[in-house]
Image 1 (cartoon, protein in one colour):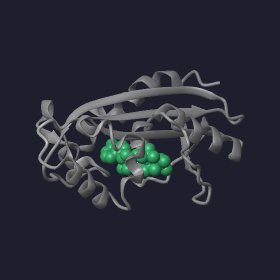
Image 2 (cartoon, protein in one colour):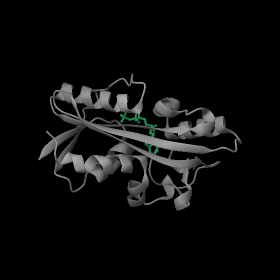
Image 3 (tube, helix red, strand yellow):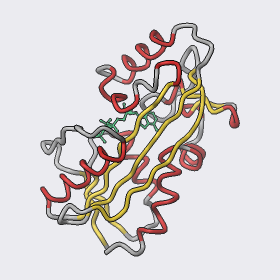
Image 4 (cartoon, rainbow, N blue to C red):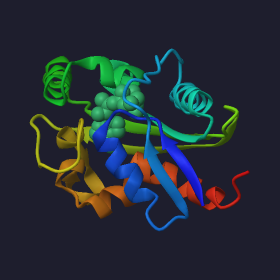
Length: 190
Ligand code: ITT
């Protein structure tokens, strides 16, 4: 059994990552809070790899990281890589996004997630991307999930992420898709 250090400070992500890895022969340990990594990459993949590599090297153990964000067409792909830095709380971030989008009719957006796993020497063993397409609502709906979930609506399900069960979100979300590609490779980690 392998131990993976989870390189995140985001509780919502942590819960979902744990659920995706349930039943797999790995033990998850949260990174020490004091160990913070500056996200200096220019893509989700670079940032996911940077977080996994830095934590793996600092701890001398296997590490897993997720870099994700919401890209809104009308805002030229913003908040994108800066999704976490768009405000000081989930509520601030949602309010800012709704304010900037105003009454724009094109509300198409996509969530992107890259999950990376690094070996104890920092080299990347696996990285995997998932995308989920949707629309930004005018007002939040639902109480589940975290982050931008209450304003991210998936037309095929007629629900926001925050209105979905955790199981449904796991199946169709950006993170879910990244994990679906990653999981089969997890058994051959070396
Ligand atoms: P770590 O880097 O410590 O993992 P973070 O919150 O800083 O945590 P990111 O830099 O990857 O993570 O930023 C992701 C942002 O996108 C953050 O504001 C999340 O709340 C949001 N986000 C990512 N996945 C999401 C999801 O499934 N539902 C809602 N919001 C999500």
